[in-house]
Every structure is written in C-alpha cells, then in structure tokens.
Length: 73
Image (cartoon, rainbow, N blue to C red; front, side, top):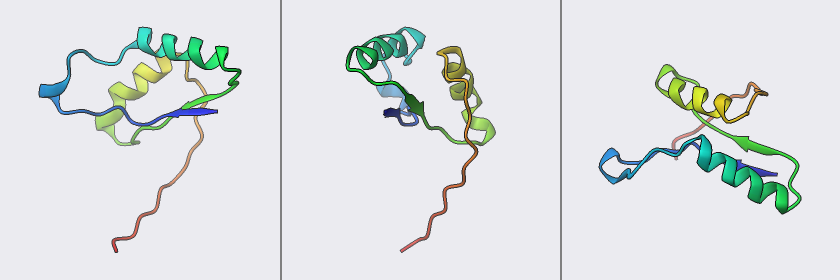
C-alpha cells in the first residue's frame, strides 16, 4: 500500500498542478511494483473540495471517515 499526502505547495513555487496524468503515472509504477492499494489524504473542510474532486477524477472512490486528534505540546 502507498499513500499520497495532501498535495500543497506555495503558489509561487508551483510550476503546474499535480494532475490526473501524474497520478496515472504513479498508478502504473505502483502496479508494476505489485502494490494493490493506493490511498490519498486531504482535509475535510470546504477549502479542500478541489482536491477531493481531483482525487475522485483520478479513481479514488472509497472514502473512510476518520478523525485526527491533536494535542499541543
């Protein structure tokens, strides 16, 4: 299993967005390596809606509800 974390970057550093074609390349590499599952993570708030759509367009169609709890140290 392999995981893509939330893909964020500073806009001035972004040459081009990570797109469906990039994810397709990653899928081919993962499959060639024998991986059977790929996951992605992103925020659940409205500002991450574009990321959700991009992941769904790339074929990520199973959602697992979860909660991340944090504690300031």
